[in-house]
Figure 1 (cartoon, rainbow, N blue to C red):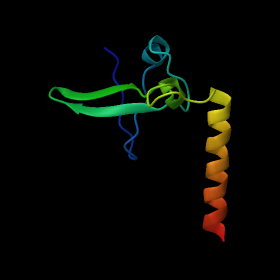
Figure 2 (cartoon, rainbow, N blue to C red):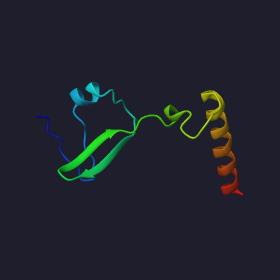
Figure 3 (cartoon, helix red, strand yellow):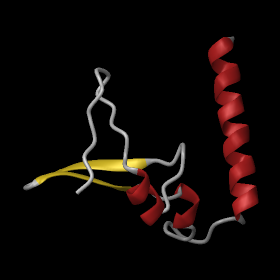
Figure 4 (cartoon, rainbow, N blue to C red):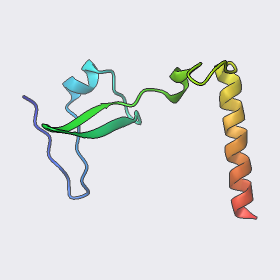
Length: 80
């Protein structure tokens, strides 16, 4: 059974064997949940994999472009 150490900043390193098994890579997001038996860590997946969840959507590239334009506009508004 792999064991991880909690750093002084509250961080843990997931063992390489488990990262590989579940396809986790640097900068991937994980969900950390409290369960009746302890803590569950699972992949958060890609937001854009939810295509169609709320109805018909645009192609992925168009959705990303719109998102980036919205973020840029929001950031410009915060500076002024």
